[in-house]
Length: 187
Image (cartoon, rainbow, N blue to C red):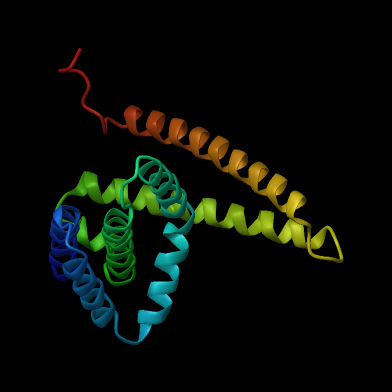
């Protein structure tokens, strides 16, 4: 029950955060999330910043360039948007560490089944990424150069997409054959 309440509270919090535009309020919300995380606050903030850096950085650069070109001030939008994204990501990471999704989905047997399947797929893909990383390290004495790392990252990404697509097809077929989807009344 505790997990369900925490997950619901986090979902409500994410909904509220998505509608807040005041940087001061977003800063206070980020401080509240960090206070709730306790001693893990620095690690949580670092993980959240690393998770959003590439995407948020690219969006921010493009937005700033467009607004500056038109003679506007990009700073208010940049501050509020990046604070919102960082706060929402921090809250999501905090909830992911504190909530047992299988227990939270316990109110619905099909939902719990889907959560277990998703967690199993995540574990398989994590292991695949770890195996690829170990393979790259074992192939040379020195650290790989940037070009090699980028190529290898592309190969890992392609392998993950192929595996995820194959596994999703297989799981869907297995679930359909066991009557999980009730498509009879939709046809």
